[in-house]
Length: 307
Image (tube, rainbow, N blue to C red):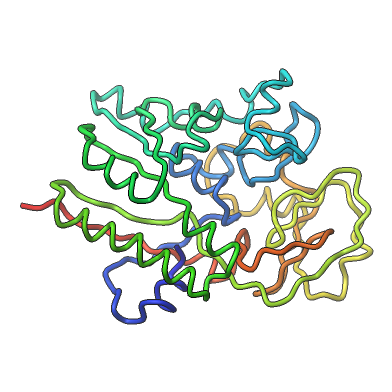
């Protein structure tokens, strides 16, 4: 839910927000982990959906904890690969639990039982939901002091149709309608934000890369592990070296994760705005992961408790 989709589809009618920036990479795996732990990307090390995992020795899908060619969740777990070095992080819910504050986390049923969910939501009661409407019904029935609700329907629509599409406008309207109904009937403060926005892809560049490992990251932040750059020049793509990424502040403050050196790519490709870069054809019309305003500028909405 970037500021771009709010302005595009609601114009000046929607003004009750504070402007925030996302983190880099502007991707769910990275930002959601920070929200759930309070750790910076430098500290938690779950930088992307596609990331080199040193325990497996290859690029994996982090959130499903599976090899790239797997369609099910937790395939690596079934193969005997431990998620300990990736997912065993302290959570904000555990900290609250120690203070006697109970939490619940509402998560889509499809991935409510995954390793990522159970490790990164430790300390909260996990409540699966089956639809947008079901999520808001279940919010009203919970008694915990803090409810965390993760909704990814807007992200899915924007990936498929693009952030400027009528389908995106329709889904955004449905979410804001549910929030308005919640505001009218609930006692309690409501905070709304996003992990990232999305940018409309108007040009695709397919590179003929010869790499020993599959690509990590996404077409907006391409992670190259042990590749040469002969086929990258001439497209206006910004290239960051591993040492530049680690030594800069781009991954935030704090103590460096012990595995960061291995997970950060040798080369990071940052395409120009509205451009996606990959080594095979892709169909997605909306993407994120980069540093454009569309990807990085997000709202923070605070609705105070009714007096």
